[in-house]
Figure 1 (cartoon, chains in turn brown, purple):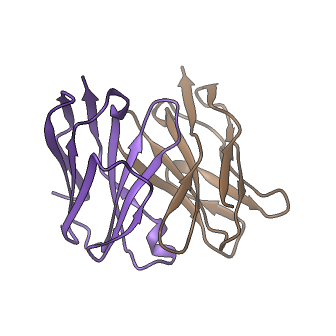
Figure 2 (cartoon, each protein chain N blue to C red; figure 1 turned 180 degrees about the horizontal axis):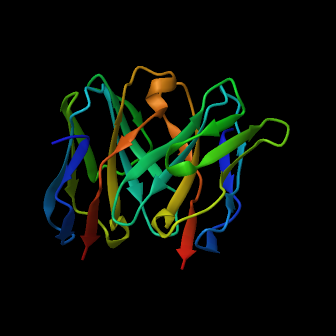
Length: 113
Length: 116
C-alpha cells in the first residue's frame, strides 16, 4: 500500500541556516513524488516534483529534493532559508492511476530571525 | 480571476443548516477535487471528478454532497453537519485523465468551516 511518512512535525531554524525536511515513502505504483507548500491562510502550492530522470530535482524558491530509491526517501533541502519560507510542507505520492494523492502529515517550518 | 477560487472563505453554520461551498477553476483543467484539512490530521481526499464524472468517493458521509455541473465548477453541498466537520475545505484541479498531469494539482485558498 502507498504511504508517506514525514519524520518531523515541526522544524524551527534561524534565518540563513540550511534546512532539510524528511520524507519517506512506500509505493507500489509508479514512483512519482511531490512536495507541496502551504503558506498561512492559503491553499497548497506545488513546490517540486520527481517523475523520472535525474534524482536531484530543483523547485521554486530555491528548494531542491533528492530521490533515493534504496532508502525510499525524498528529502527536501534549502541551503539558506528566509523568513518567508515559514510554512507547512507536505510530501505526497500517488495512490492510484486516477490522480489520487496520499499526503504526509506535514512539517511545519518556522524560520526565526 | 486566475487559478482556483473558492467561496465563501469563511462559513459558520449550525447543525441544522444547509449551505454550499463553491469552487471555480480558470486553468482549463478536467479534474477537480475536494479535500478536508483538519488540525493535526493529514489532508483527506473526499471526492474526485474527472470530466464531470465522479471517480472517487473516499467513504464520505452522505451529509456531504458534491456536484460538478461542468469541468470548471465544483460544489460541496452541506446539510446536518456535526461539530467534528469543522475544518478547512480545499478544492483543487488538475489536467485529469490519469497520468503525471493528474498529480500536479492546483489548490484554492480554502473555505474555513465552523459547525456550531
